[in-house]
Structures are given as structure tokens and as C-alpha cells.
Image 1: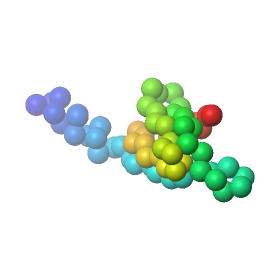
Image 2 (image 1 turned 60 degrees about the vertical axis):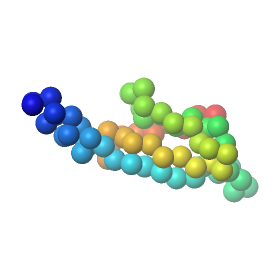
Image 3 (image 1 turned 180 degrees about the vertical axis):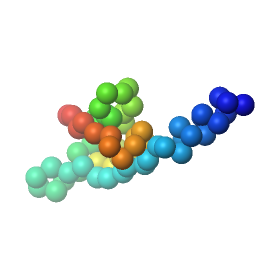
Length: 66
């Protein structure tokens, strides 16, 4: 039962971050990697430069690389 409570707390603490990555000419950048610093949590932008990632908290740092 304690495990279930901790699992629920972890899920509650996560925050969803989403956006669109574009270049200097405002064109979307597909295939760009976005990682939550210090974790193995990451996503890749879609063909329109969109991404959505669940991070561990509001102080998380996102690292963008291409």
C-alpha cells in the first residue's frame, strides 16, 4: 500500500511541458532531441517541430540538441 501511495505522489509531481521548436526563419525543426537534464527522460520533435514532455518538476532544465 505504501508503494501505491508513493507512485501516486510521483505522478502528481510531474508537469507537462509542450511547445514548438523553430529556426531563425520560423520554420519548424523536426527530429530535435529534448532531454530533461540529469535524467534519461527525453522526446524528439515531430515533423512540425512539436514536442510534449513530462518533467519531474517546475525547476527541471530542458536541454535541446540537434
